[in-house]
Amino acid sequence: MKRIMKWTGIGLAVVAAVIAVAVYGVSELRLLRIYDVALTAFRARTGLSMEEAERRTRSLMCIGCHREAGNVIFEAPWVGRLVAPNLTRLVPAYSDAELERLIRHGVKKDGTGIVAMPSASFAHLADEDVSAIVTWLRSRKPLPDSGPSATEWGPLGRLALALGQVPYDADHIPPVKAPANRPKELGRYLYESTCSHCHDLDEARQVQKQTAPGLRIVTPAYPLDAFRALLRTGKGLGDRELGLMSVTAREDLRHFTDREIDAIYRFLSGAGDGELPGEE
Image (cartoon, rainbow, N blue to C red; front, side):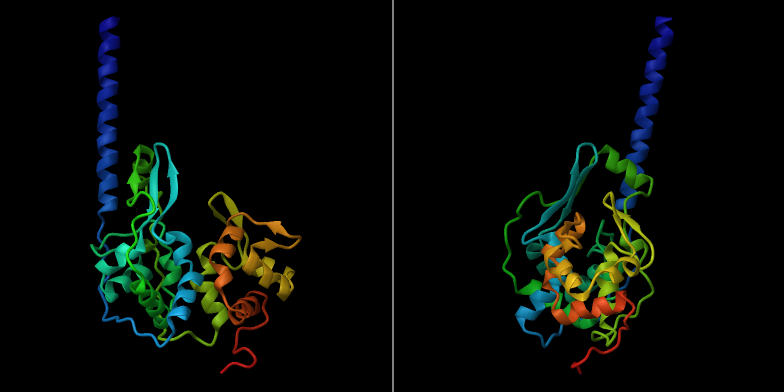
């Protein structure tokens, strides 16, 4: 009996080792997958002031994730650590065309994909907004990393990678022909390039264990002044805190102008999305 138990234990250990090696190997293949996305001839050209380029970069949520010098987005024992890298050190290593591919397609300089980069939304960005982001980021002086500089994967994270449970937006980029300039339909454009990170229009979605409601469903309940307050302060109707939405509003969405907020409101509330009064 002891001999049987001994060999059973050895057999189970061998099986566990084989599974571990297989999971590691498959996860490495996933991490090293190359995306066949060709570089374009993109060059950042903007007539915007540096202040406006910074405002657009912040409103488009770049700094909300990456912060001023990198940010740990998620960390858990056995799962790993997900890091939004320090852009002040990353950007100088990329050409304008490589940054455009990174933003719009979620593909890094070496052709591999980025985890949790919302490129399926950024694919909608106009050249002028991509140029604003690139121009402002290039204007910043390199800063030392504020914390861990690289993403790391624990055993459970490796298993999730092997099972295809880790999101890569590079797998789901819509067939979008990005415009040179922001379109007249500003509300739809801003929804597609920002709000759609978390929200669909007509159905709820689960985001970080929270329910992100369909925006066409909830927006009509907000008067315009309350909608403005929501995006400026993160406070919902009844002065409620709304979890991730409140954090995102206070860090990112507060940088929208009144014109931009009004355009989003008009689009989401079904009031139309044409040229706003008093605009050319």
